[in-house]
Amino acid sequence: MSFKEPSFWNNEAKEELHRALKETDPIVGVAKNVIMFLGDGMGLTTVTAGRILAGQLQGKNGEEHRLMLKFPIDDAFSKTYNVDHQKPVFALTVTELLCGVKTNMGTIGVSAKASRGNCASSEGTHLSSILDWSMAQGKSTGIVTTTRVTHATPASTCVHTPERNWEHSVPDDQSDCMDIAQQLVRNNSNINVVMGGGRQEMFPVNHSDPETDTGYLTEGRPDNLNLVQEWKNKQASENRRFQYIWNKTEFDNLDPEKTDYLLALFNPSHMQYEADRKKDKGGEPSLAEMTRKAIQILKKNDKGFVLLVEGVRKDHNNAGRALHDTVAFAEAVAVATEPSLLDESETLIVTTAVHSHAFAFAGYPGRVNDILGVVADSAEGTPASDGKPYTTFVYRKAVKVQRRSSPTFTAEQMEELERAFKRTHYPAIYTMKELAQRTKLTEARVQVWFSKRRTSLLRKQARLSEQLRLNSFLPMLQNSVVSAPTAPAQYMLPDTAGYHLQAAPETDVLAPKTATDVTPSGLHACADHRDIE
Image (cartoon, rainbow, N blue to C red):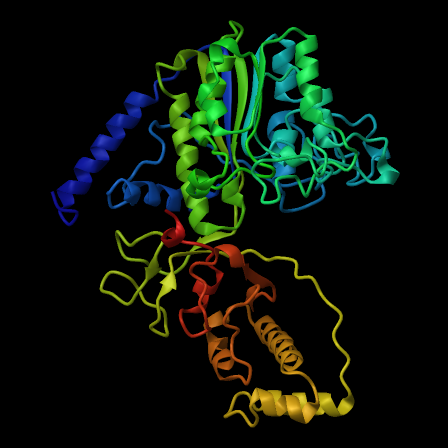
């Protein structure tokens, strides 16, 4: 039946309603098992784009696809903010989720009485979490993440620190506090399953590592501690059945029936994006595979378990890969709903976002448009005002730009530079080489000056009105003496609010080679499917 027929949509609505009513029969009782799925940066626009991608990967149109296999019984929104900040980060929101207390920016597992980076202020402020409460009831516990296991979200389950960045060390003047990795190993060895990345937080610097280019860790613990060995020794001293693994082969060979405690560190730092996972040197399991293995280990406890599963790399400013990670996250949720794995009448599944992200759809792409592609001038899509294609979505995130000291110029040099700059709206009065000769500067220094001067002017103009579109500045960029760099280390243009929008160079598949290839929204896209095999 055609999409253009009204009866198609009437039937679609009836089927959706019947399915929802059938799948949302309430289960009354106390949950034996609890699984919390946390999607970092997984706001509504990310979920929408991920849903469309999931459908298109299956050969469907995408827009009508259902990302989650089952309807949740209850939907809700939550307000996220900190005691001291309007906009939170996941260290804070996860502490709120797991401990029930709002705290200060940059802290983990401590109340708002603790000041960031101040060890002394955190004394007596430690919070208990759902993992603490569950272990007190005799339940098994587990943490699965695609980030370092010492990162903010997994750390929020069991660590107490006034500084989220103290993952493998603390400053000398804050030595009364223990770093996050030490707390995880020394104070929380009763957690049954810990899976993720982060070997560099557990091993000394220069420790051998088979996945690094050098064969050893160039980043690691400065105190020469081997916390993985400490963890093994602790488990052995308790006569526990334990395993430490670091690659996909060991993961596949692990028998959950013979393993009660598992530490798995699949990467020196974060695990790979899902789109890049199969290229990993040592091999990594997917989030769904880790979820399944964790459940198989934990469910042996007759008293039940609590498991935290985090898909974090939707938060890492790489649009194309973020959507593939969103699809992988949905697949992990689907694993937990398999009747052969868990009894749904005994299991509470909570799926939520740690926070949203500055992920936005751009313009009006046509129906069934490639979600990882561009919106072109067609009957279906709405083109840009200049007729050029633009990417379907962007990460519009303000970043902190490191300021460097400006080189010193003589008054005569500044006069020449300013004179040339003021003429960039018209035919250039000098070539770059001629201007360098006139000012007795290198061409490189002249180009850097023009780049900074142009950015400064654009920012001032942008502040006049937040309604100005970035498109209006494109002619100035095209006609200026210094053309847009063809291979920038970081290609940045000013936002209309006066901040910078940055595209990561290593993943900038859609970023143009010059400023004329695509409309400005495309400059901020981070990646698409064309570099993903």
